[in-house]
Length: 311
Ligand SMILES: Nc1ncnc2c1ncn2[C@@H]1O[C@H](COP(=O)(O)OP(=O)(O)OP(=O)(O)O)[C@@H](O)[C@H]1O
Image (cartoon, rainbow, N blue to C red; front, side, top):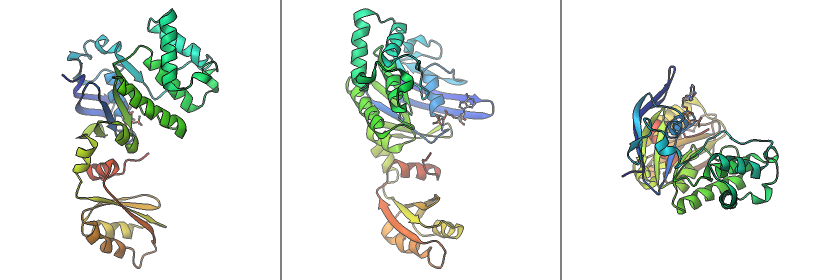
């Protein structure tokens, strides 16, 4: 039995179909990644799993019970870490943990021990006496994670926990996810950073425009485009002429351009390279470098949608 089963859920906000009939399962003990660009529907999906939003249609089962009908089936076992910080800024880190711990019914020695355990995990024990409004963005995120762990959840859901924070806190959060998972927690981790999802997750659902467009292990997803390579061409200038030439070049499958780079998904790159370089002759666009890589999740996303997975 899957720990969680999302069955054909949809959610609309006026004329925006934020989530459009998606289904997936989360097995006990795994880290499942929801990967997709901004606006793909990740937050809306996990808000429905966290019972903060009710799906317009479809159902969600936790240990085979419908949490759309009976939200309390999941509530006690769920640690939900939203993107927005839910802390009291004028209280210290310790006071925040005490406050939230009490709302979970923890008292006395049990509360103290749990706070100690959680602050060891999030690694900010030395700053717990300071007021939260003196914390860096990364420390607030870490405390926010600590708050969600106080009641020993079985399933932890994190909504883009590393957006806009310093590299040190980011690394700490990624390590924390792995530690929590080793302790037996099941994790749903949403991100638009493919390297985080590649690093952390056993399985990945790739989302775009409210749909799950692919699902599998990293290896299974990359196998979808195994015979292809990702070619990144840095240029001083991108022109329409070059883009249109590349689109018509043999073995070039997908073309995506940025301000100073062109990303290609290419079938037989050895044979394709000459044609690719030829596109730049007699144009004002000059090649600064060419990089050929094995496909990764970024390339999978490009292959599936024709767009890059970016901010
Ligand atoms: N409360 C709301 N009211 C109206 N539209 C909403 C609301 N919440 C989300 N949306 C819209 O639904 C779509 C999906 O948003 P959602 O936040 O689920 O995406 P996301 O993948 O989590 O992206 P992000 O990383 O930017 O949060 C977007 O077009 C968004 O603007």
